[in-house]
Each structure stands twice: as C-alpha cells, then as structure tokens.
Length: 244
Image 1: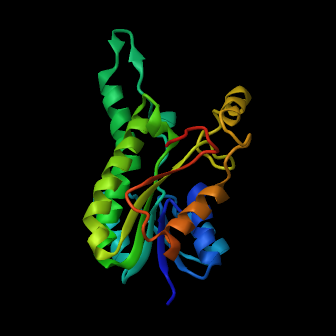
Image 2: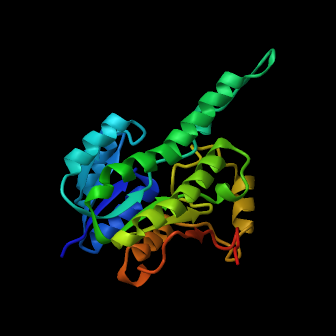
Image 3: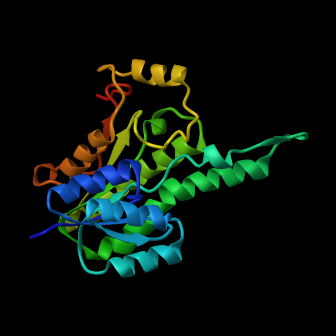
C-alpha cells in the first residue's frame, strides 16, 4: 500500500529535502506552505502535490486539511523558523519595549509550536494505525534564551504528551532536533564566517549538518523499524549537544 505523507513547510530547505526523500521511496507526498509560487515550483520539481496555506492560521489549516482529504500515514511538521530575524524586539528611548517583546515571542510561538499543534489536531483523525507524527525542533531548545528556543522546547514537551495520547492507536510521535544545518535559509544571510566556524567546531565529526541528514532521520522514524521509538527527541547535530 502506498504511504501518504504530509510535510508542512515543504517548499524549501529541510521540508523540501524530507518531501524528496519520501517521494523517492514511492510515497504519495503532499507539501504545504505560505508561498504558493515557491510551493508550486517545488511540487513540480519533485512530482508531489502542493496545498498552500498558513499553518499558524486555524481557518487556513482547516482548509488545508479538507483539501488534503482522505487518510494519511505520516505527518512531518517542518513549518517554522526563527521569526526574531524579522520581528525582533526593540528598545526605545524609555527602556525595554515590552510590546515589541510580546510580539516577537508570540510570533515564534505561533510559527514553531502553534503551527504543529493546529496541523496535527486537524489531521489526527485520519492518521492510519502504524503512522507517525514527526515534529522538527532545534538544538536551541537546549540552551537558547530566546523565544525561538523556548518555542522549540515547548514543542518537545507537547510531543511527549502527544505520544502518550496517540500511542494506543498504533501511532508514534517524535521530535527531530537539528543542530547547524547548511544549505538552508534559516539564518537569512546573517551567519558570519566566524559563527559558522564556531558551530562546526562544536561538533564531534567536524562538519555542518546537511538537509539529507534530517530527511533520512525522518524517513527512519516513519519506518517499520522505528515502531517502538516514540515520545523521544532525536538529536541530529554531530555531537554539538550530547545526551545520555
């Protein structure tokens, strides 16, 4: 039976790599995203279906779920990113801009937590037994004192609870937590060569991550061999953050 896979944020970067991996294995893949033109281009390139919409908007998520239709086997919540790069809090002449801080934090919580919660809630009824929910976190959840890191940490906590909720249905829920990954637009051109070198130096294998590293991990977590792995955070960072 052909597996049906939904990848949010699938128009570029890690989401595109994940969609390509599942599609290459013969799955029927649906990608979503806000940029309809980019999404359509990626869909044509990969031979997958595109459904445009904003995963942080509950009405649009409901519309996307209706357009997807039918049953699903795998959901990969890739939509997100650090909105502080575009909506960071400011300081004014009178001191801390609390309104700006509130806006910045809500933007990252919406992009990285609410998007996954809404999409998962919308499609959970049609996920077939043996299926998987895969959420994409960040190494920033381990140490970043920022709205982005906090949102990704909240995503991991929510996923642990989700795993307990859906486990009796034969479904798994896990988080992939990437470290520094090259060939994506995450840093929006703001990564200095010095910072890049420091991120690579923090790894044990002396290299940056690649989109394929995340795609292969997602593919494994949705495989038959990973059916007893659930409620976990899988760190993919070359040893930059270790657990035991």
